[in-house]
Amino acid sequence: MKQPVITEEFLAQLFPASKADDFFEALYGGAEAGAFDIALLPNGFDPDSNTIILEFRLTERPGKCMACNLTYGLPQVFERHPVINIQEIVSEIEKKIAPSWSVKGWQIGRTSVIDAKTNSIPLFIQLEKP
Image 1 (cartoon, rainbow, N blue to C red):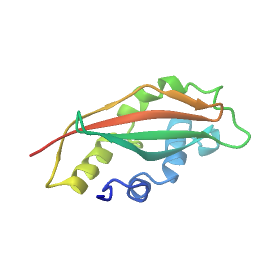
Image 2 (tube, helix red, strand yellow):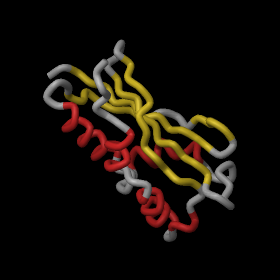
Image 3 (cartoon, one colour):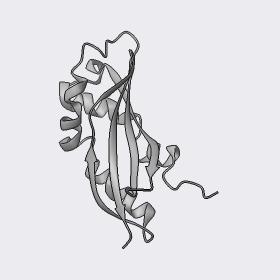
Image 4 (cartoon, rainbow, N blue to C red):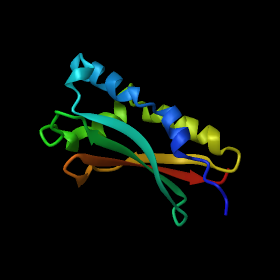
């Protein structure tokens, strides 16, 4: 069985845990205002559509309230926020998978609730053979 190219380790280098503090610093003027941590994780590959599925995993910080925050509006914020920088994430993934694949496009999905302390925002990266 072939090993995945887009691993948790690769994504952690691409999107380090410190990005959450950087994001809240830019958004609120202080990292302490952030209610959750953000991780970028692999969530599979759809061979029918040649799509890599990743997720931004939002995990409530101790003493904070994720439910009190507007996490449902985050996909639109993530889509264009320079700290999150999805275009750079997609570009680095394209470098990693070249020359076998190239990126045809990407799309961010809606926030879903995993449990009371965890939300997920999917990122779909559609590939094509060059």
